[in-house]
Image (cartoon, rainbow, N blue to C red; front, side, top):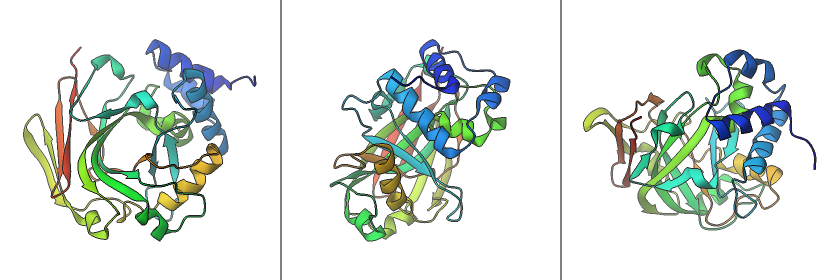
Length: 257
């Protein structure tokens, strides 16, 4: 068996122990390029046995704009849970970052080379979702982006709420989203996805997933499409609820220490 990289070994140790890397070590070990970062993702997942079937059944994807290079990470099987969710306080290393998103579940395989029309037609469900982010190193804001990409693109949990049947409809990109923290509404607006179209990157992801895992995207797979509300740094004891008008809602409670 091919030996893991030093960074992969350090991240596996962090996952198992709950102890994050210090910022200096994380910066020093950051991969030199995206290809190396994706190799680390795969090595960590394999070492920790995250995929019962040998392949991921959920993915996250993102980009800061339509002109920047997209990034992605598979989501571990144990990190995919249904709403309402209660997370143990001990699950976080350095961050409890809450992002409100729409996730889609696929009705059929989406192969490399799929078009935007193929991607829309492949959607079986559109679901309200909360991604909870964490970083397995201190001083996460100052860490190199390639470290954060290698660190599963900061994913920790994906909570899936209620939704509607597909296929995708473009008007879903303009839904009203509401965010409540501990029963108090903190945000309400229409739309909010940074790329305008939440499925803009899905054809790219189809190619990326097929490159990383031969089966690529299959029927039943879940893809989360990027935050509508930015990142809220939650605290132990917080109750977070989000709803998309006419679509569905999702809830998570962060356990206290």
